[in-house]
Length: 355
Image (cartoon, rainbow, N blue to C red; front, side, top):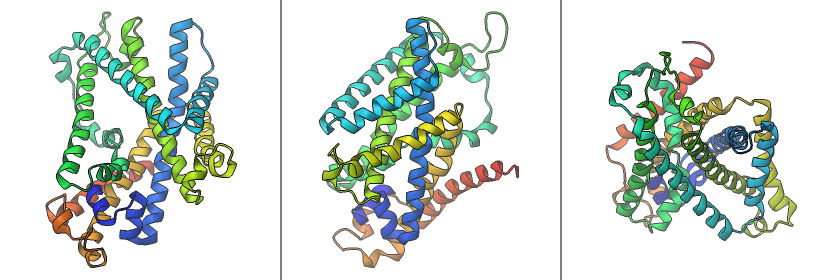
């Protein structure tokens, strides 16, 4: 849906909302974008201090206040995003992603030896699925880079579809393998007690397993943190009408420093105030950020572009005959938006203890 929106409007996510839904749609998408990024940055900063504390404890046997380590995590990676060139950031991100994949493969090889099919399928609770959906949606957030994919593939429908499909399949495979590795661990401890959280057991193991989990978690957190810092910084700079040139000049306080301060300072202090907010922040980001921004708005935008505004679009870019990437007509768009809206509504009702 986002790829088709982009082909029709040749604009980024916020531009798509403005063209299709007007200023109201642009404001709603902007608020969702801000909410999503701030929630995730709060979660990353809070968890970053916790993971660094675990790493320092394992390496040196000492405990450092998590508030201090959260500040170092924010300052260190935030400074890199601020001062480093685009080339340096690309190389750093490539190195971190490489380390992430290596640690993931090593971790799977280490943990899969303890997987038993009976443990994997012995316990299930389907009533927990609705509560898990927002975090599942959050885990597959990549839609903000769809305009980049469309541009890189020069608007070729087939290549865009293949890129999106493969780009979704690879993380799906990683998630399935990791879930199997964790949930397939024994459910009964050596003393006969029931293991409630197999991941916590693995994480607290001494030696290779615990270290690999901490390394993988920290690398995953860092790469995500850098991406969302850069994305929100550009968003704030756009809102301040700062030119691309001024954003690259560290001496330009208003053009460079202020967007970074707006991006990093609020989530840092929120992370300090609410130290155990990681999972709650992920849940809220998935519900009100991801499902609204990438679940409700895209079908609404595409419906308007296909059926209400088709005649207003340039013929070279409009025309669903050349750009339609999702079949099923309006019923599929309405169903997609309705499912996302239902999950959001359920969360709102639960927040007010209606059911």
